[in-house]
Image (cartoon, rainbow, N blue to C red; front, top):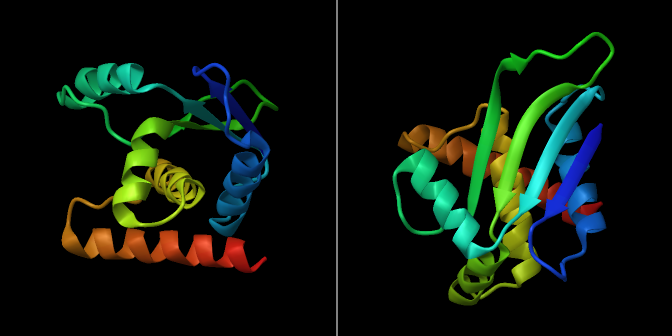
Length: 147
């Protein structure tokens, strides 16, 4: 699997290697083919607010956005299947972690797995879908922590 992480925040204080390991683990648990590609972007609040307004019509920053490819993105022969992009705003995650009473690292891990699951077709619009998505997030994070 090809996982690329780009930070639009300088300097980037996060352990991007740990983020990459979790992304690979989550994709493996979801049986995503090895010939797949995922992009993760870490952005500041201004960029996240701009993206959130552009794509969701909401003028405030959010924690995570996922931009998936349609059925999947076509690639020339032999190139990886492109899953899409997960965009995370660490500053928003920091506030949420404080509100929820857990570490920033845990909140970032939750957001990463959440964004990946969206790319793989999970949703939380309906209550039953939200429960299934939350259960899958927990299963992945628990298995990762136990491994």
